[in-house]
Length: 320
Image 1 (spheres, rainbow, N blue to C red):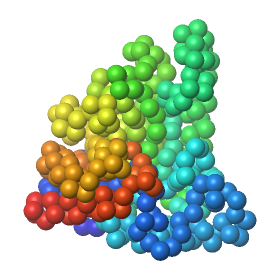
Image 2: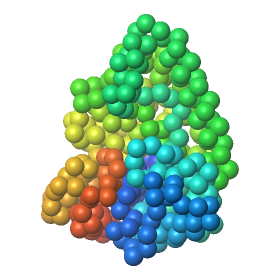
Image 3: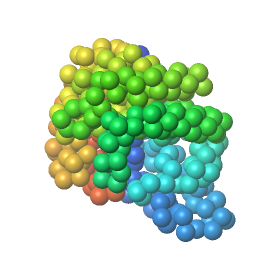
Image 4: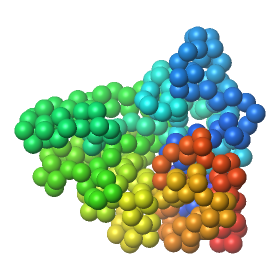
């Protein structure tokens, strides 16, 4: 069984006992594992059309070779432009997917594509959004439908380009619990999430939800929505991999939970210990995907990520 097949089985909670694939929502460490330059973000935006084409070819080569070196079973392409170094314009995202597909990599290709609204991610517009939730809910209705329709158009393009899975980045909670009230969830979130997951699966793709915060109270809704995997299991908010597994059984694959802050500021031996702890908690479930709770940022020491990789490999050897 290759890594790509293993990831597909894990997303269906059917991975063989003791086999846990590796996937990162955002991986910014490509340059740390190669001598080649991986170009995205503002630097990429400044390139000419010809330079962009060459950069995308190089990026695809880097992703294919480094993912193989590290044993990644899935790789996320950069998102559409936002305030992050790991971004590409939409046409270039699609081009990168096609370049990766031509290389026939041994991993699933994952892309961000969000079919429903989320809580505000910054202070910009936060107060106005909250006022509209209470005083002008019909405007939120319009936003929900517009978000869904725009995502459907993007989903068509991503499918044609050759992605295997999409993650819906939709934060719904902070460290205290859900941001939206139960009636707001029933009106603005659940119907669109169900429509989105149905649309994704009709396309033959895997549907993954990424959300930060403590979403323990939302787990029953996630299972009912048709989403196949939950990513983040934010340890900073108190989310526990073992507690989530107990709550969802085999109805959701669980991805992540290795604290990104620990990856940046911890020591390799701490990373080793925490990785082995997580694998011992859920590695035999058939539905675990190892990874960090959010982006593996460029500030992450290479030695720390290597410690996670080695712990992963050691655990698999012992388990088999």
